Each structure stands twice: as C-alpha cells, then as structure tokens.
Length: 251
Image (cartoon, rainbow, N blue to C red):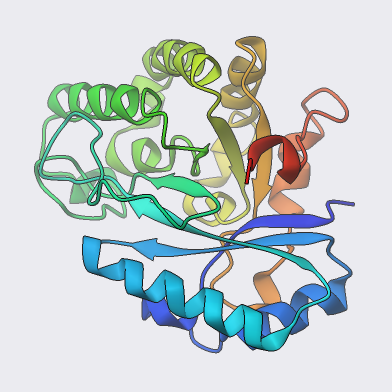
C-alpha cells in the first residue's frame, strides 16, 4: 500500500476537470493517504499566481492529510540545456521537472511520427536537456523519466542507447539529490510491450543511488492514489525501494 501521492493536478491547469482543491483533499482523506503534493503546471512565469491560489484553497479547506503545495515546472523547449520556463522557485514546497515538449520544436509528440526531428537530433537534444535538468539544484523530482523518449523515437532501435544516457543522468541526479518518479500515467503512454522493460530505468537509478518516489499524475479525482501500473514496476525492483515524502521534501 502506497499511502502518499506526490503528483496531483488541479482544474486551474485547464485540463483537469473536476479537480478542485477541495475535491482533491476529500479524495485523499477518503483513501486514507498520509500526505499528498498538489503540483500543478507552471508553463510560464505567470503561472506562479495559480500556485498561491492553490495554497489558499487548501488552507481554507483545513485538511486532515498533510499537504505540500509545489509545481510541475516545465522545461523551456526553446532551448536544449534543460532550463525552465521560470527561474523563480520561491514559495514552492516541491519542484517536479516536467519534460514534455520536443526541444527546439515545442510539440508534445504522441508517436515518433509527431517528431519532426531526425532520431539522432532528437536524442542529442533529449540528452542535453535531461542532463541540464538533473544538474539543477532547484529540482526535487524528475517527472516520468523517459516518457518523452518513448513518444519521440522508435524504442526498438534506440532503447539500449538511451539506457546508457539514463545511467549517466542517474549519477548526476544522485549527486544533486534529485529523485526519480515512478508515474502511474506513464502506463497509459507506453506501448504494452514496453511495460516489461520500463523497470530497467529505475534499476539503473537505484544502482547510482537515486531515490524513487510515487506520483499518480492525477487529472481526475478517481486517479488520485492509483498505482496499478506502478505496482507492476515495483514488483521487479527491490522491496521497500520507494522513498518517503519527507526524505525528498525539505521545508
């Protein structure tokens, strides 16, 4: 039983219908979760105002569950060095690095056919951006490692090369105390034949000393605390390998 959830979005992001802060907290209490992190998107510097609104909503509710108010801060796709869309991180309990868009192109690919870069150019940009992310001391958690990779290239051709990149990125993450997220929504984004391989990314992370944490990436109340896909990953990893929120979040 995983009794926390460190990646939850609200309706303020514009694509999470029904996810009022009150609905989130009510669901978390119903599930008996000990703590949650509400981590809505920051796509631009102006989105910091949303985070303050979430904090006010949570305070007004008065939850029994421990609530961290953070953000999934997006990587700036106009660059290939992993910089973020904002350099202001004050007021955030938790910073999750959101790597969603093809660097220099800016689209969210659903398949390699959506990626207009050559595989070689994409992989170089992905490599450079990833290394920039895990070198940033402001980051607490790397969201859904490899999800953009899975969407952008043919994994049958490039997965083993990517594993070498993950190993180097994991060493940097450990050095900078950046945890990697086992993300429930990733199961919906991967082709089923890759479900049995994805644990290798986390084995590599653990081997380098990276902490692992769970996040649902919930955009609906029902998805909060769900970990069916995550359980499949955990079955192939050492027991008790998940870290606790308090090991990651230092207030």
